[in-house]
Amino acid sequence: MTPRVRFAPSPTGYLHVGAARTALYNYLFAHHNGGTFILRSDDTDKDRGSDEFQEDILEHLRWLGLEWDEGFAVGGPHGSYRQSDRYDRYREVARDLVDRGSAYYSFATAGQLDAFKQEAREAGTSPAYDGSLEPSEAEASERLAAGETAVVRFRVPRPGATEFADVVRGDMRFDHAQVDDFVILRSDGTPTYHLASTVDDVDYGITHVIRGEDLLSSTPKHILLTQAIGGNPVTYAHLSLLMGPDGKKLSKRHGDTAMAVYSEAGYLPESMNNYLALLGWNPGEDDTILPLEEMVRRFDLDTVSKNPAVFDPKKLEWMNGVYIREMGDAEFIAVTLPLVEEAVGRTLSDEDRLRYAMLVPLVKERAKLLPEVATQARFLFVDVDEYDEKAWSKVMAVDEGPVALDGAIAALEGLDPWTTEAIDTALRAMLEESELSARKGLQPIRVAISGSTVSPPLFESLEILGRDDSLARMRRARAALS
Ligand code: GLU
Image 1 (tube, helix red, strand yellow):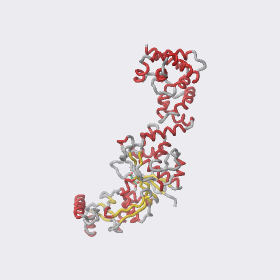
Image 2 (tube, protein in one colour):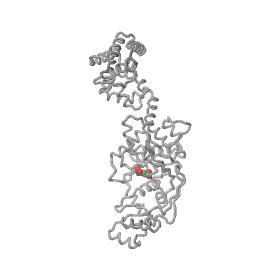
Image 3 (cartoon, protein in one colour):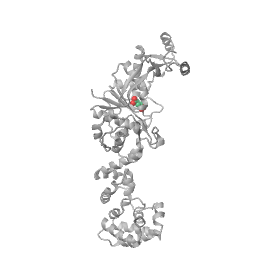
């Protein structure tokens, strides 16, 4: 039997990086085992759910390349894979469970339930609600017939316990003395998460449920429901939640948790997948840089750790830099050209593109995020329109500024050929003659040609910019100093 797994996000928020890791592990597990990766929309919460969140989830799963084989928005043999389309099915199952005695209509009010729990605690008995406040079956039928509303609760077998072997967490045991007769259908006829999720898992033939640890305590309920419905047993794997660098549950406090922020900031989906995969899974052999296909080849759910993993944006950024460096120049140009053109404000001409291609090896080597490439390349295509204020006051408007620029202009004016090596030699000679350190003598040139102290390596930049533009920019900066 090939595995069938599902990722089942509720569209009540943007795709969270932790949820993306859950999706990725489902994807890796399915692909490694020749199984099916299904996407389900758990959209039963009409108050908190929105189309915008739903769209965001789809968009970023696709951005990550975690395409699903079956499910929401792509279809399959089980309909829309959207829970809000299946209320009739959930009601039918709830009614059937009532008919067979596995569930019952419950009239107990919140106040009565509180009192029940309070008394149980005081008496030292189990506080799990066991249905003992309910009317007889005959009375219940009468009250329903008279139009009274009731929820439907699952009848948890007592005494008893549910045991299962969680792939990640090991042997688990939940004593039913701790499990309430839980609600499966609300009084308005809408299903709870427990009912909808379990019915879907059974109907869709799900074999493995891989999800966050926050749902671990729901699992005995899902197992009991699955048995009562007559579904096939499911294997569970509960992943540890992601932590911030301070060891607390990853949240907004730690910075950005929405995948959209990372895709917009210029992270590559490849590095994001790679980084997320390593949060809990060790591929072995000390390897850290693994493309998706390689992760698919090696993925083993049995080796996923139950220790909490820390989401560290600094490490993600480092990994992104590794992926950028490993890109071929052509691919790098293809993904960065639109960013450069946006920064420059026009389409690049053929000549501009040649210039950009010359710069690429220099910026690719250093970049951690793609947009910084555009910022660094901009000077090649637009004249300096303003100087960075701090750079100006720190390196230009000081004694060394005019000395360095005068020296550089004199050294470069008649330089032939205009190559990186020749520029290097000429400017180093200038530094020696003017008794300037490399920092004090070269930074003004950098600010003159790029407007800031951050630019690709200087000698190469000058070569690519060309003699005329370079000298014109230095003269203009020099003039602004007198
Ligand atoms: N819809 C649930 C959530 O977003 C997950 C359901 C599940 O994986 O069982 O938390």
